[in-house]
Length: 334
Image (cartoon, rainbow, N blue to C red):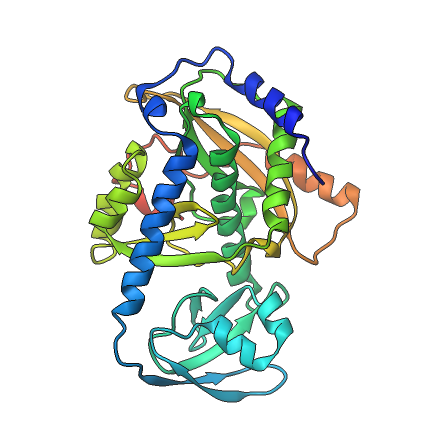
């Protein structure tokens, strides 16, 4: 499925009509903000790699098909994805998440620090609940990337946060702030966002994880007041570190873990956007954007999927973004 550029332009004009320009949105373009955060991500990633120093070997005991085996890998450098390459190509393609020592979910692209047992999980694994949560969390993250790309600067868009994944709610969520009051998106606008999610999936982009200190995080999100407000609370609960993820040039905060690439997302719909009741301290209007998706390879007929879409339209009951952040930091940032 492809979106016509003229159609997207018309949709954007419809979304942004009557929006007052904000000073910050005049100073920063979406493209420059994304490039700046991504550049800082790359620089910090390279700095940490160079810090590894002398390469030490660790023993990874792989448990699974086609057979259990022991791999000798590099501490602080090798990832579960590297291990999967030794086992077989299909394990690289379809493994969504790793499980260390039978109880620690681990990103496929996250470096291994110690000797351990390793299992590679996909969407049909016995531990599918772990993969499902990572998948839902990833969809929220990717929705943020799509929203960031789809709105023009004049919209004054700021990504706020996304709550913990809860499959039972029937939708994944990303909360945003806009300078437009009372935006009621049309079916065409929702469809355009859905198409952008599918296009992102089809690019099969890697999803990278990185831990940074508060100073680097503040610089990465220097243009986003919501992220800056969240950083002290998050770092205070994580030994002064902030976990960030990158897909393409989009960077956001999340505890993780997430699945290994956008290509693991199959059918996807953005069926609803809800206005968040305004609090006295809110300077911008807040919206809850909701979606539903299926993992790659999981197919449902049109009728069954339409039931999921209808359910995903209902307001997700997760904590709202304008509730006191200090009290619900763990509930607001997945």
